[in-house]
Length: 145
Image (cartoon, rainbow, N blue to C red):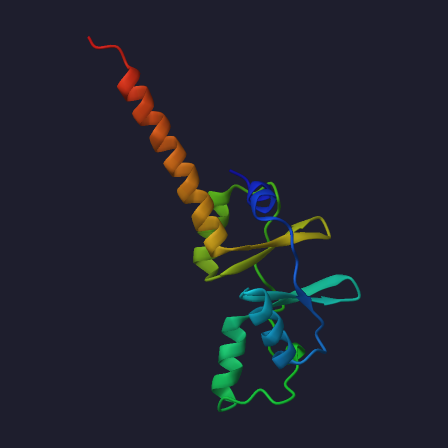
């Protein structure tokens, strides 16, 4: 299964934030849309990602206060990036190695969407379940010798 298939199934809704936006605004957006990450965009270009992990780290360092902290102060500037033609198992391996929960998907310089570790786990589970059903069906229909 390819990353492009995950995006096709889940849809390509993309939630973004500007680097000069406040972290509090980013948190409100993530809560409103029930998501764990936002793509940081500046002048139509992806600059990086901000996830709940960076927000929690900022809250920890600031004794629970975000104040006027800017996204620019906390976002990840070099996130793991996937291509639509990447195999899901390769993406899963890379996500585990980098401890990445959210991965933007780009085709060249075009941002197509974001896949989460949950999306990848669900895709792998569904693919393996399908294969298991096919194998069981094959075994049941095999001629007796």
